[in-house]
Length: 271
Image 1 (tube, rainbow, N blue to C red):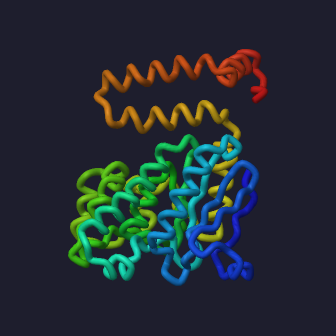
Image 2: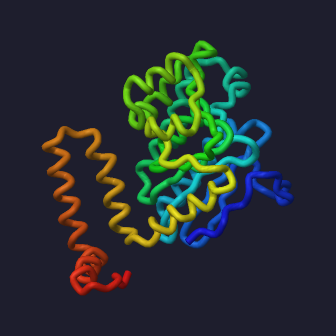
């Protein structure tokens, strides 16, 4: 069970915190904080790299059961660092930058642990993409979301990949074509977030969700998450075939055998 995460307000320890990403482990949960508050946690190259490294490390660590990604300061994430992007207008540079961003987003879904986005303030462009890439998202009810690159003449193509896999096509396309913001409750209705709660209740809501997740067997969660994303890209028949194989292997795991036996015995499982 995760302890309450640090508040997003100014932290007296900020001077000693990592400049772009801060990891705080609470028991079996890793909290990753985007730590560029003055830039609204824009995804600079160094922040993208640090986030990618942290996700890779966590994916290989069986002691970590779940991950929360949040942002320091007044916002979750304002997308790419536009000043940094504009400073080097070269095709090869942009290809590399967006490829690195895409690898980081994909890593979230490839890792065995569930990843929860903790959203407050704004989540725009690649920041909105990051919310959509996470397995779950809990938002403050006054948060706002947009894929606003089109307002600058840059269609949010890479964010559209994650966005279109969360929202309906027309809802996603409306956001992409207009660049307009939507509020947290509309994001909830559209499927971008799981819950929208008052900011004061944000961490408590996430902790309650984490408690339910970490109470389940790690092996079952990892197998189920992997299957979930793989089958989405398949036809129905192939998806059922893979799902059946996954369930058969899961059923042979000691945790599943114990869980079923506990149900038959009318007792709590001994995991």
